Image 1: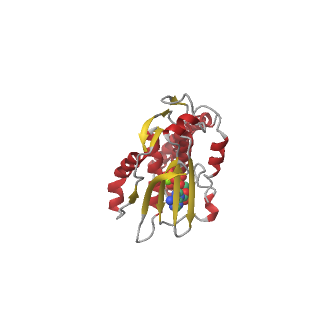
Image 2: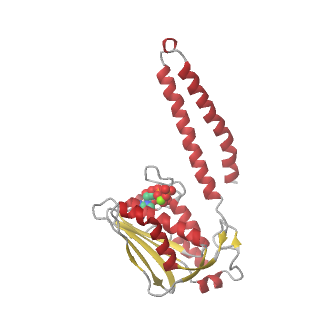
Image 3: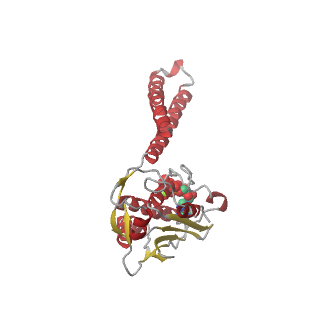
Length: 259
Ligand SMILES: Nc1ncnc2c1ncn2[C@@H]1O[C@H](COP(=O)(O)OP(=O)(O)OP(=O)(O)O)[C@@H](O)[C@H]1O
Ligand SMILES: [Mg+2]
């Protein structure tokens, strides 16, 4: 329903933008001597255009979030997925003088997952870590392992940390404290991880750094959680693939609250 509403808003917003553009052009063509407030009118028209453009971007972001693609499950190995995501960011990190400290679990961590989506989630977390680094000595530590019988990947940074008053908002759509941020990164991470039957937990100390841990089920655990749903394209937007969340998942969900 929200997506339908967003679409309804888009058309009038586009007319608003085009009209502001026309008004701006018409004002620009008026002779200076008969319109003493020409500059002022021009800047008002421009301001209108900027506001409508920003609203349009917000709507586009929302629509992307509201219409996630279906899950395509395959057998994947967590260490490899993490390594490939880090490779993708290598140049970017190196340019900022960051060499991530990576420690992989010594044996393979087999998952049943949508590799593209998993990489997207990891990338969002790594970008957040990178963007938070504000000290001379920049550190990103990435660790994979097994805890309480489940595989996890942990991303740690020694950046600015998250102030206590902001912690409960960081998973809300559009919540951002970054200039140019859209506030979609963490809500997308949470949705992807939930769809994989996993959970996200965040620990942060202002001025010290942040640790985000994504815990996922092993392939065998996934198959037990979602029997009969193994290599299907799954409807997106549900806590688990196509059925109610289990009690275990619901309690896992509470860990997403930042600590
Ligand atoms: N590692 C981190 N260190 C410090 N603050 C963080 C970290 N990760 C997230 N945050 C806080 O949570 C907010 C929301 O993060 P989120 O990834 O959802 O959006 P964003 O990074 O602002 O924008 P984008 O949509 O581009 O990802 C950030 O603006 C920031 O305030
Ligand atoms: Mg982000």
